[in-house]
Image (cartoon, rainbow over all chains, first blue to last red; front, top):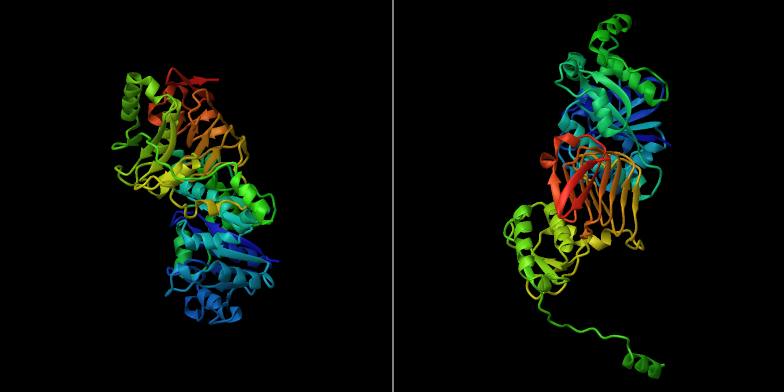
Amino acid sequence: MARTIVITSGKGGVGKTTTSAAIAMGLAQRGNRTAVIDFDVGLRNLDLVMGCERRVVYDFVNVITGEATLNQALIRDKRCDDLYILPASQTRDKEALTQEGVGKVLDEMGKTFDYIVCDSPAGIEHGATMAMYFADDAIVVTNPEVSSVRDSDRMLGILASKSRRAENAEDPIREYLLLTRYSPERVERGEMLGVDDVQEILSLDLLGVIPESPDVLDASNKGAPIILNEQSDAGQAYTDVISRYLGDDVPHRFLDARKKGLFGRLFGG
Amino acid sequence: MSDAASETASSDPFELKASAITVPVMKLFDPDMDRITDLLTTKIEQAPDFFHNAPIVIDLSALKSGDATVAFALLVGLIRGMGMIPVGVQGGNELQNEAAEMLELAILSNSAGRPRPRPKARAAAAPGAAPEEHSLLVTRPVRSGQRLYARGGDLVVTAAVSSGAELFADGNIHVYGALRGRALAGAKGDVSARIFCRKLNAELVSIAGRYKVSDSISREHWGDAVQVYLIENRLVVEPI
């Protein structure tokens, strides 16, 4: 039975799709059969970040409506045999995602995959609630600034009340905090919230801290998930995130402006 | 059988019939709680007997829609705290009606004062779950946008309460974490209710309708472990 992970945030532009791509790739690289689904119907981006936009024929909505089979719509990643992408429809809107339809597709995928990563759209409306409804785990992507933290907090409240697990009174969704676009220098200057501040407000397990890096935009443009860039701070941080998610105790890196150089030298080359 | 049925029918313990009763209606024009409090206090001083235990209907139709529902909850607490019995609201929007229902007020239609059929609020409640009349214990953080109500008792939260979250209790509110959201104790007018918290960062605290927003809470106690209670209609914030 697959484990379903939703990548969510409430706020837009914090790095959900980047994170979805990196985490799906990271899990697959370690031999887990992994699928990543774009729930942002109407504003699809995941295919670009995964670099498979030229191979999209059918999409998630086609599978829900029965116009295509799951196997027809799933796109196998060229770099990693265990990774599949289910793109969003660009021509429909989010109402096309019915709870019954999404549940059926996830059930079918659950038979063959180990992990299903759901890339949630921004907001707390239908698309976002559909992405999280069937989740077992939630990774809440947050930037170190007040509005993003509050939106994440709101999303955590919704996760606790409007998921299948909540409605069936099962164990609650496991929630993890992922802090992205973190700049230790700006934290030191008091321009950004620090890790401790965010953790205190959200009272949540910290899955990782991804440093702000120009490599992330570069990776999106190239269609290669940032985790494939082993030279990059951000790529290494995502590798750590995968290890932590899978249960390894890995110390947090890139939290400190001074240490960054040292670790960069140790792990960068 | 039919005999028995007609017999019980003739000796029913009650009969239901419509009856018109004159009830004072408080028609609001301005949601400013300070002005409302002042005017209400004056009116009650003029005729204390008239207002004591008097039923009152709150008419919200003259307010612009979108006025805060919290202010409405405060108002109900205030009226109850002053010895009157708010029995219903009319002319409210959906949000205000929802808040009214939570505070156990009837929602009246504007025209004849008849109860309006309730659309979905009741259906949303879990089937078979009777409204609980006791304290509520919450061990997970209360997130922004969440709303909790301890009907008839105390509300105890052993984690943090985020900004944008709302706590209501007919009794006391205890928060064994940081209180960053809103806390309204004595929601039904219990002036002896108190709020306790480990770290005061609240957006609003209220007891029986008397309230302070974070701006008017003394910086002296900001971030401290405090209790909030009423002395002669004034909110007191005191370190514990």
